[in-house]
Image 1 (cartoon, rainbow, N blue to C red):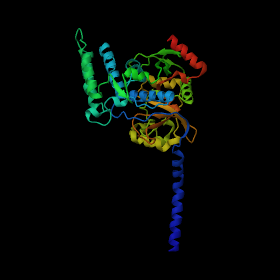
Image 2: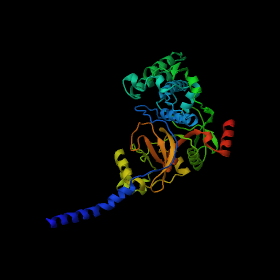
Image 3: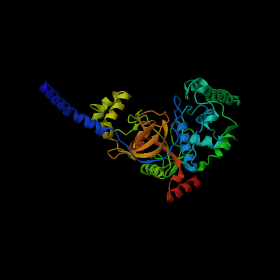
Image 4: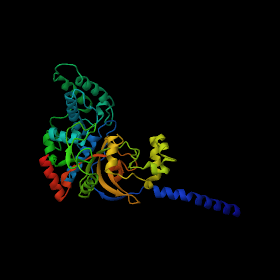
Length: 405
Protein backbone atom coordinates (compact mmCIF):
# COMPACT_ATOMS: atom_id res chain seq x y z
CA UNK A 1 0.00 0.00 0.00
CA UNK A 2 2.80 2.37 0.94
CA UNK A 3 4.58 1.63 -2.36
CA UNK A 4 1.39 2.29 -4.28
CA UNK A 5 0.94 5.68 -2.62
CA UNK A 6 4.55 6.63 -3.32
CA UNK A 7 4.15 5.56 -6.96
CA UNK A 8 0.99 7.67 -7.35
CA UNK A 9 2.72 10.67 -5.81
CA UNK A 10 5.66 10.22 -8.16
CA UNK A 11 3.36 10.04 -11.19
CA UNK A 12 1.52 13.14 -10.02
CA UNK A 13 4.82 15.01 -9.72
CA UNK A 14 5.84 13.91 -13.22
CA UNK A 15 2.45 14.94 -14.63
CA UNK A 16 2.75 18.26 -12.86
CA UNK A 17 6.21 18.79 -14.24
CA UNK A 18 5.02 18.03 -17.77
CA UNK A 19 2.02 20.38 -17.46
CA UNK A 20 3.94 23.15 -15.74
CA UNK A 21 5.43 24.82 -18.85
CA UNK A 22 2.02 25.16 -20.53
CA UNK A 23 0.37 26.31 -17.33
CA UNK A 24 3.14 28.83 -16.78
CA UNK A 25 2.85 30.08 -20.35
CA UNK A 26 -0.91 30.44 -20.00
CA UNK A 27 -0.47 32.31 -16.73
CA UNK A 28 2.13 34.63 -18.24
CA UNK A 29 -0.09 35.26 -21.28
CA UNK A 30 -3.23 36.12 -19.33
CA UNK A 31 -3.63 39.86 -19.53
CA UNK A 32 -3.28 41.70 -16.25
CA UNK A 33 -4.01 45.42 -16.42
CA UNK A 34 -2.76 48.18 -14.17
CA UNK A 35 -4.69 51.44 -14.35
CA UNK A 36 -2.53 54.50 -15.03
CA UNK A 37 -5.28 57.09 -15.45
CA UNK A 38 -9.04 56.78 -15.06
CA UNK A 39 -11.61 59.56 -15.46
CA UNK A 40 -15.23 59.34 -14.24
CA UNK A 41 -17.93 58.04 -16.58
CA UNK A 42 -21.69 57.64 -16.30
CA UNK A 43 -23.42 54.26 -16.37
CA UNK A 44 -22.93 51.80 -19.22
CA UNK A 45 -25.96 51.59 -21.52
CA UNK A 46 -27.08 48.96 -24.02
CA UNK A 47 -27.93 49.96 -27.59
CA UNK A 48 -29.20 46.40 -28.14
CA UNK A 49 -30.50 45.79 -31.68
CA UNK A 50 -30.01 49.29 -32.99
CA UNK A 51 -27.23 50.92 -34.98
CA UNK A 52 -27.03 53.77 -32.51
CA UNK A 53 -23.52 53.48 -31.06
CA UNK A 54 -22.92 57.07 -32.25
CA UNK A 55 -25.92 58.14 -30.17
CA UNK A 56 -25.30 56.15 -26.99
CA UNK A 57 -21.56 56.86 -26.99
CA UNK A 58 -21.78 60.60 -27.62
CA UNK A 59 -24.70 61.15 -25.26
CA UNK A 60 -22.69 59.25 -22.64
CA UNK A 61 -19.67 61.36 -23.48
CA UNK A 62 -21.64 64.57 -22.89
CA UNK A 63 -23.04 63.11 -19.65
CA UNK A 64 -19.40 62.75 -18.58
CA UNK A 65 -18.68 66.34 -19.59
CA UNK A 66 -21.58 67.54 -17.45
CA UNK A 67 -20.40 65.38 -14.55
CA UNK A 68 -16.91 66.85 -14.80
CA UNK A 69 -18.13 70.42 -14.97
CA UNK A 70 -20.99 70.38 -12.48
CA UNK A 71 -20.60 67.23 -10.40
CA UNK A 72 -24.16 66.25 -11.38
CA UNK A 73 -25.09 62.90 -12.92
CA UNK A 74 -27.71 62.89 -15.67
CA UNK A 75 -29.29 60.11 -17.71
CA UNK A 76 -30.00 61.85 -21.01
CA UNK A 77 -32.38 60.46 -23.62
CA UNK A 78 -30.77 58.75 -26.61
CA UNK A 79 -34.13 58.22 -28.35
CA UNK A 80 -34.80 61.98 -28.33
CA UNK A 81 -31.54 62.40 -30.26
CA UNK A 82 -32.38 59.53 -32.62
CA UNK A 83 -35.85 60.92 -33.37
CA UNK A 84 -34.54 64.38 -34.25
CA UNK A 85 -31.50 63.14 -36.12
CA UNK A 86 -33.29 60.62 -38.35
CA UNK A 87 -35.70 63.30 -39.55
CA UNK A 88 -32.72 65.55 -40.35
CA UNK A 89 -31.04 62.68 -42.16
CA UNK A 90 -34.19 61.88 -44.15
CA UNK A 91 -34.46 65.52 -45.26
CA UNK A 92 -30.82 65.50 -46.33
CA UNK A 93 -31.27 62.22 -48.23
CA UNK A 94 -34.26 63.60 -50.11
CA UNK A 95 -32.37 66.79 -50.94
CA UNK A 96 -29.65 64.57 -52.40
CA UNK A 97 -32.29 62.71 -54.48
CA UNK A 98 -31.19 59.48 -52.81
CA UNK A 99 -27.50 59.97 -53.62
CA UNK A 100 -26.39 59.63 -50.01
CA UNK A 101 -26.54 56.94 -47.38
CA UNK A 102 -29.67 56.69 -45.28
CA UNK A 103 -29.04 54.31 -42.39
CA UNK A 104 -29.10 53.81 -38.64
CA UNK A 105 -25.48 54.97 -38.35
CA UNK A 106 -24.14 58.40 -37.51
CA UNK A 107 -21.34 60.25 -35.76
CA UNK A 108 -20.58 62.40 -32.74
CA UNK A 109 -21.35 65.44 -34.91
CA UNK A 110 -25.00 64.36 -35.11
CA UNK A 111 -25.46 64.50 -31.34
CA UNK A 112 -23.72 67.88 -31.21
CA UNK A 113 -26.09 69.19 -33.88
CA UNK A 114 -29.20 67.90 -32.11
CA UNK A 115 -28.14 69.41 -28.80
CA UNK A 116 -27.44 72.77 -30.44
CA UNK A 117 -30.62 72.91 -32.50
CA UNK A 118 -33.20 70.88 -30.60
CA UNK A 119 -31.96 70.58 -27.02
CA UNK A 120 -32.39 67.34 -25.07
CA UNK A 121 -34.56 65.75 -22.41
CA UNK A 122 -33.86 63.28 -19.60
CA UNK A 123 -34.43 59.57 -20.23
CA UNK A 124 -37.59 59.55 -18.13
CA UNK A 125 -39.34 62.12 -20.34
CA UNK A 126 -39.82 59.64 -23.22
CA UNK A 127 -40.87 55.97 -23.43
CA UNK A 128 -38.05 53.60 -22.52
CA UNK A 129 -36.27 52.24 -25.63
CA UNK A 130 -38.05 49.24 -27.12
CA UNK A 131 -41.18 49.50 -24.98
CA UNK A 132 -43.42 50.68 -27.82
CA UNK A 133 -42.88 47.37 -29.62
CA UNK A 134 -42.86 45.18 -26.54
CA UNK A 135 -39.09 44.95 -26.10
CA UNK A 136 -37.10 45.93 -23.03
CA UNK A 137 -34.31 47.63 -25.01
CA UNK A 138 -33.90 49.47 -28.31
CA UNK A 139 -34.80 47.25 -31.25
CA UNK A 140 -34.72 48.75 -34.73
CA UNK A 141 -35.29 45.51 -36.67
CA UNK A 142 -38.84 46.36 -37.73
CA UNK A 143 -38.47 50.12 -37.36
CA UNK A 144 -35.87 50.64 -40.09
CA UNK A 145 -37.48 48.11 -42.42
CA UNK A 146 -40.50 50.40 -42.32
CA UNK A 147 -38.68 53.74 -42.37
CA UNK A 148 -36.04 53.08 -45.05
CA UNK A 149 -38.30 52.19 -48.02
CA UNK A 150 -40.56 55.13 -47.17
CA UNK A 151 -37.64 57.59 -47.29
CA UNK A 152 -36.12 55.94 -50.38
CA UNK A 153 -39.44 56.15 -52.24
CA UNK A 154 -39.60 59.88 -51.63
CA UNK A 155 -35.90 60.47 -52.37
CA UNK A 156 -36.06 58.65 -55.71
CA UNK A 157 -39.48 59.85 -56.73
CA UNK A 158 -40.03 60.97 -60.33
CA UNK A 159 -42.36 63.73 -59.15
CA UNK A 160 -41.67 67.19 -60.52
CA UNK A 161 -42.53 68.73 -57.18
CA UNK A 162 -42.73 67.27 -53.67
CA UNK A 163 -45.22 68.34 -51.04
CA UNK A 164 -44.13 68.69 -47.43
CA UNK A 165 -46.44 65.90 -46.28
CA UNK A 166 -43.79 63.24 -46.68
CA UNK A 167 -42.04 64.76 -43.64
CA UNK A 168 -45.23 64.30 -41.63
CA UNK A 169 -45.18 60.64 -42.61
CA UNK A 170 -41.55 60.21 -41.56
CA UNK A 171 -42.25 61.91 -38.25
CA UNK A 172 -45.17 59.59 -37.68
CA UNK A 173 -42.96 56.52 -38.13
CA UNK A 174 -40.31 57.97 -35.83
CA UNK A 175 -42.86 58.75 -33.13
CA UNK A 176 -44.48 55.32 -33.44
CA UNK A 177 -41.24 53.42 -32.81
CA UNK A 178 -39.12 55.82 -30.75
CA UNK A 179 -41.73 57.85 -28.93
CA UNK A 180 -42.79 61.43 -29.50
CA UNK A 181 -40.28 64.04 -28.36
CA UNK A 182 -41.85 66.16 -25.62
CA UNK A 183 -42.41 69.85 -26.18
CA UNK A 184 -42.54 70.38 -22.43
CA UNK A 185 -41.81 68.08 -19.49
CA UNK A 186 -41.32 68.15 -15.74
CA UNK A 187 -37.99 67.10 -14.24
CA UNK A 188 -37.26 67.14 -10.50
CA UNK A 189 -40.24 69.40 -9.87
CA UNK A 190 -39.49 71.97 -12.57
CA UNK A 191 -40.97 72.38 -16.03
CA UNK A 192 -38.73 72.60 -19.08
CA UNK A 193 -38.65 72.60 -22.84
CA UNK A 194 -35.86 70.53 -24.42
CA UNK A 195 -33.92 73.72 -25.12
CA UNK A 196 -34.39 75.25 -21.69
CA UNK A 197 -33.36 71.94 -20.09
CA UNK A 198 -30.23 71.83 -22.24
CA UNK A 199 -29.35 75.35 -21.10
CA UNK A 200 -29.17 74.12 -17.50
CA UNK A 201 -26.49 71.54 -18.38
CA UNK A 202 -23.74 74.17 -18.73
CA UNK A 203 -22.28 72.83 -21.96
CA UNK A 204 -20.61 75.24 -24.38
CA UNK A 205 -20.93 73.42 -27.70
CA UNK A 206 -18.38 75.72 -29.34
CA UNK A 207 -15.73 73.96 -27.25
CA UNK A 208 -15.93 70.65 -29.14
CA UNK A 209 -13.70 69.75 -32.04
CA UNK A 210 -13.11 66.68 -34.18
CA UNK A 211 -9.53 65.66 -35.00
CA UNK A 212 -8.26 63.07 -37.49
CA UNK A 213 -5.07 62.00 -39.25
CA UNK A 214 -4.88 61.19 -42.97
CA UNK A 215 -2.45 62.06 -45.75
CA UNK A 216 -4.94 62.49 -48.60
CA UNK A 217 -5.58 65.98 -47.20
CA UNK A 218 -2.97 68.49 -46.01
CA UNK A 219 -2.03 68.41 -42.35
CA UNK A 220 -3.24 71.34 -40.24
CA UNK A 221 -6.30 71.86 -42.42
CA UNK A 222 -10.01 71.12 -42.02
CA UNK A 223 -11.85 68.57 -44.16
CA UNK A 224 -14.96 66.40 -44.19
CA UNK A 225 -13.94 62.78 -43.58
CA UNK A 226 -15.06 60.52 -46.43
CA UNK A 227 -16.86 57.92 -44.32
CA UNK A 228 -20.36 56.55 -45.08
CA UNK A 229 -21.96 57.42 -41.75
CA UNK A 230 -20.57 60.97 -41.56
CA UNK A 231 -23.27 62.59 -43.64
CA UNK A 232 -23.23 65.94 -41.81
CA UNK A 233 -20.76 68.30 -43.40
CA UNK A 234 -18.92 69.14 -40.17
CA UNK A 235 -15.18 69.33 -40.62
CA UNK A 236 -12.39 67.57 -38.75
CA UNK A 237 -8.92 69.00 -38.18
CA UNK A 238 -6.14 66.95 -39.78
CA UNK A 239 -2.89 66.39 -37.86
CA UNK A 240 -0.01 63.88 -38.08
CA UNK A 241 -0.61 60.53 -36.41
CA UNK A 242 1.79 61.05 -33.51
CA UNK A 243 0.12 64.37 -32.72
CA UNK A 244 -3.36 62.85 -32.77
CA UNK A 245 -2.24 60.21 -30.29
CA UNK A 246 -0.62 62.86 -28.07
CA UNK A 247 -3.85 64.82 -28.06
CA UNK A 248 -5.76 61.78 -26.78
CA UNK A 249 -3.23 61.22 -24.00
CA UNK A 250 -3.13 64.91 -23.12
CA UNK A 251 -6.91 65.11 -22.84
CA UNK A 252 -7.12 62.01 -20.65
CA UNK A 253 -4.29 63.09 -18.39
CA UNK A 254 -5.95 66.47 -17.94
CA UNK A 255 -9.13 64.79 -16.75
CA UNK A 256 -11.13 64.94 -20.02
CA UNK A 257 -12.67 61.95 -21.76
CA UNK A 258 -12.53 61.51 -25.53
CA UNK A 259 -15.29 60.35 -27.86
CA UNK A 260 -13.80 57.92 -30.39
CA UNK A 261 -15.06 56.88 -33.82
CA UNK A 262 -13.32 54.11 -35.73
CA UNK A 263 -13.15 50.51 -36.89
CA UNK A 264 -13.94 47.48 -34.74
CA UNK A 265 -14.35 44.99 -37.59
CA UNK A 266 -10.70 44.01 -37.20
CA UNK A 267 -9.89 40.46 -36.08
CA UNK A 268 -8.02 41.92 -33.13
CA UNK A 269 -11.23 43.39 -31.70
CA UNK A 270 -13.02 40.75 -29.64
CA UNK A 271 -16.51 40.63 -28.15
CA UNK A 272 -15.00 39.94 -24.74
CA UNK A 273 -13.28 43.29 -24.12
CA UNK A 274 -10.01 43.43 -26.05
CA UNK A 275 -8.79 45.43 -29.03
CA UNK A 276 -5.28 44.67 -30.25
CA UNK A 277 -3.51 45.25 -33.58
CA UNK A 278 -2.50 41.61 -33.92
CA UNK A 279 0.38 40.95 -36.32
CA UNK A 280 -0.84 37.64 -37.73
CA UNK A 281 2.21 36.93 -39.88
CA UNK A 282 4.52 37.07 -36.88
CA UNK A 283 2.25 35.19 -34.48
CA UNK A 284 2.36 31.47 -35.36
CA UNK A 285 0.68 30.60 -32.07
CA UNK A 286 -2.33 32.61 -33.21
CA UNK A 287 -2.82 30.75 -36.47
CA UNK A 288 -1.51 27.29 -35.71
CA UNK A 289 0.54 27.47 -38.88
CA UNK A 290 0.29 30.60 -41.03
CA UNK A 291 -1.80 33.62 -41.92
CA UNK A 292 -3.72 31.66 -44.55
CA UNK A 293 -5.11 29.34 -41.90
CA UNK A 294 -6.07 32.33 -39.73
CA UNK A 295 -8.46 33.54 -42.40
CA UNK A 296 -10.33 30.23 -42.27
CA UNK A 297 -10.95 30.39 -38.53
CA UNK A 298 -14.34 31.44 -37.16
CA UNK A 299 -14.61 34.66 -35.19
CA UNK A 300 -14.89 32.65 -31.99
CA UNK A 301 -11.77 30.64 -32.86
CA UNK A 302 -9.88 33.84 -33.61
CA UNK A 303 -10.95 35.32 -30.29
CA UNK A 304 -9.81 32.17 -28.46
CA UNK A 305 -6.45 32.31 -30.22
CA UNK A 306 -6.00 35.93 -29.24
CA UNK A 307 -6.93 35.13 -25.67
CA UNK A 308 -4.37 32.31 -25.62
CA UNK A 309 -1.61 34.62 -26.79
CA UNK A 310 -2.79 37.45 -24.54
CA UNK A 311 0.07 39.67 -23.43
CA UNK A 312 2.43 37.94 -25.86
CA UNK A 313 0.46 38.85 -28.99
CA UNK A 314 2.78 40.64 -31.41
CA UNK A 315 1.34 43.86 -32.82
CA UNK A 316 1.61 45.75 -36.06
CA UNK A 317 3.67 48.93 -35.83
CA UNK A 318 1.33 51.81 -36.66
CA UNK A 319 2.67 54.27 -39.21
CA UNK A 320 1.07 57.12 -41.12
CA UNK A 321 1.54 55.21 -44.37
CA UNK A 322 0.00 51.95 -43.10
CA UNK A 323 -2.91 53.83 -41.60
CA UNK A 324 -3.64 55.57 -44.90
CA UNK A 325 -3.30 52.36 -46.89
CA UNK A 326 -5.78 50.54 -44.65
CA UNK A 327 -8.27 53.40 -44.90
CA UNK A 328 -8.03 53.58 -48.70
CA UNK A 329 -8.31 49.82 -49.29
CA UNK A 330 -11.30 49.50 -46.90
CA UNK A 331 -9.36 47.34 -44.47
CA UNK A 332 -10.03 49.96 -41.81
CA UNK A 333 -13.54 51.43 -41.88
CA UNK A 334 -15.76 53.60 -39.68
CA UNK A 335 -18.31 51.43 -37.92
CA UNK A 336 -18.39 52.18 -34.18
CA UNK A 337 -18.28 54.98 -31.62
CA UNK A 338 -17.21 54.66 -27.96
CA UNK A 339 -15.78 56.75 -25.11
CA UNK A 340 -12.11 56.65 -24.07
CA UNK A 341 -11.85 57.41 -20.36
CA UNK A 342 -8.53 56.03 -19.16
CA UNK A 343 -5.12 54.48 -19.77
CA UNK A 344 -3.89 51.10 -18.53
CA UNK A 345 -0.75 49.00 -18.89
CA UNK A 346 -0.39 45.20 -19.10
CA UNK A 347 2.27 43.13 -17.36
CA UNK A 348 4.64 43.53 -20.32
CA UNK A 349 4.38 47.32 -20.38
CA UNK A 350 2.07 47.60 -23.39
CA UNK A 351 -0.36 50.51 -22.98
CA UNK A 352 -4.09 50.42 -23.65
CA UNK A 353 -6.96 52.85 -23.63
CA UNK A 354 -9.84 52.05 -21.30
CA UNK A 355 -12.99 52.41 -23.37
CA UNK A 356 -16.67 52.54 -22.42
CA UNK A 357 -18.81 50.58 -24.88
CA UNK A 358 -22.60 50.62 -25.35
CA UNK A 359 -23.29 46.88 -25.48
CA UNK A 360 -24.38 46.58 -21.87
CA UNK A 361 -22.23 45.05 -19.13
CA UNK A 362 -20.85 42.35 -21.40
CA UNK A 363 -17.40 40.81 -21.88
CA UNK A 364 -14.76 40.09 -19.30
CA UNK A 365 -14.70 43.66 -17.99
CA UNK A 366 -18.43 44.45 -17.62
CA UNK A 367 -18.81 46.64 -20.69
CA UNK A 368 -15.30 48.11 -20.65
CA UNK A 369 -12.84 47.39 -23.46
CA UNK A 370 -9.05 47.54 -23.26
CA UNK A 371 -7.81 48.70 -26.66
CA UNK A 372 -4.09 48.93 -27.32
CA UNK A 373 -2.63 52.21 -28.46
CA UNK A 374 -1.38 50.52 -31.62
CA UNK A 375 -4.93 49.35 -32.41
CA UNK A 376 -6.27 52.85 -31.86
CA UNK A 377 -3.54 54.49 -33.94
CA UNK A 378 -4.38 52.25 -36.90
CA UNK A 379 -8.17 52.24 -36.61
CA UNK A 380 -9.25 55.71 -35.46
CA UNK A 381 -11.42 57.59 -37.94
CA UNK A 382 -11.74 60.64 -35.68
CA UNK A 383 -11.61 61.72 -32.06
CA UNK A 384 -14.06 64.25 -30.66
CA UNK A 385 -13.20 66.16 -27.50
CA UNK A 386 -13.26 69.41 -25.55
CA UNK A 387 -10.57 71.78 -26.77
CA UNK A 388 -10.06 72.91 -23.16
CA UNK A 389 -8.40 69.55 -22.62
CA UNK A 390 -5.44 70.91 -24.55
CA UNK A 391 -3.26 73.18 -22.43
CA UNK A 392 -1.36 76.40 -23.12
CA UNK A 393 -0.18 77.20 -26.61
CA UNK A 394 -1.91 74.24 -28.22
CA UNK A 395 -5.24 75.43 -26.89
CA UNK A 396 -4.53 78.92 -28.20
CA UNK A 397 -3.62 77.49 -31.59
CA UNK A 398 -6.86 75.50 -31.82
CA UNK A 399 -8.80 78.56 -30.65
CA UNK A 400 -7.39 80.59 -33.54
CA UNK A 401 -8.19 77.74 -35.92
CA UNK A 402 -11.80 77.68 -34.74
CA UNK A 403 -12.13 81.45 -35.12
CA UNK A 404 -10.74 81.31 -38.67
CA UNK A 405 -12.60 78.14 -39.62
